[in-house]
Length: 256
Image 1 (cartoon, helix red, strand yellow):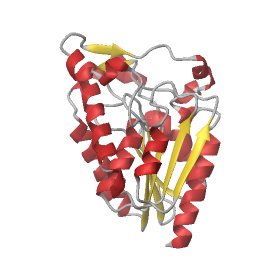
Image 2 (spheres, one colour):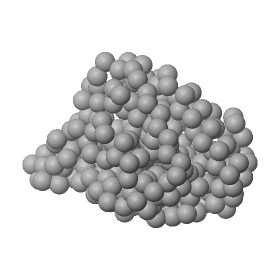
Image 3 (cartoon, helix red, strand yellow):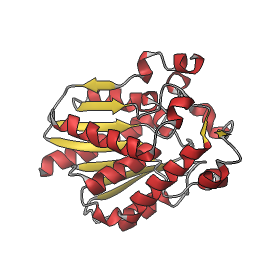
C-alpha cells in the first residue's frame, strides 16, 4: 500500500490532451511510470499536438501488481492506446522510453503508424543478471536497481517515480520483447528517430544504431545526447528531445 501511495500524484497519472490531428503516444519504461514522460507530454501539448501518455499494466502501483503482468499485457495495452489515439487523430506517432521504446518499435512493426521515436530503447542490456532473468528467478525473486551513476544527479526528482526494483521473472518478459522487436526491424517503413545518450548506463551502446541500420524507413534520424543517464526524458536534455520529436512530426505532416 505504501508503495502505491508513491504514485498518488498528478504527474504519475495517465495523461491525455486533445490537440491537433497529429497525435503522439508516450510510453514509459520497465518499472517506470507516466511521470517519466510528463515533461515531453507537456512540451508536445504546448506545441498543439494531441498527446496520450499511459501507465503500462502493473506499473505505477506496486511490484506485486507488476508480477502478475506479462509482456503480452504490455504490448496489448500499447496497441489499444494506438487504437484509442486514432479515434482522435489522422496521424499517430509512437514514442517510448526504454521498454516503452521497444514497444514503440513493435507497434511500428505490427501496426500502421506514421512515425516512431524509440528513446533509450535497448536492443540488448548491460545488466548480466537482467539478461539471465528467466534462470535467475528461481534463486533470486527480486532484483533491486543500483544507486545509479554520476549522471543521475541531473534528473528532475519531481518526475522521477518508478519502482526501486522488480520481480526477477519480469526481466524475462522484457528480454522477450527485445528479441521480438529486434527480429523484425525490417518491417518498419515509417520515419524513425532514435534517441540515446552516450552515457546511458543501462543499455547496449549499439542499440540505436542497430535499430537504424535494420529498419526499412527512408527517413532515419538519430539524436545523440551526452552527460545524461538512461531516463533522459527527465534530464536537462528533455527540451532537445521534445524539439527533435516536434521537427519529425512536422516533417511527417508536411509529407502527408
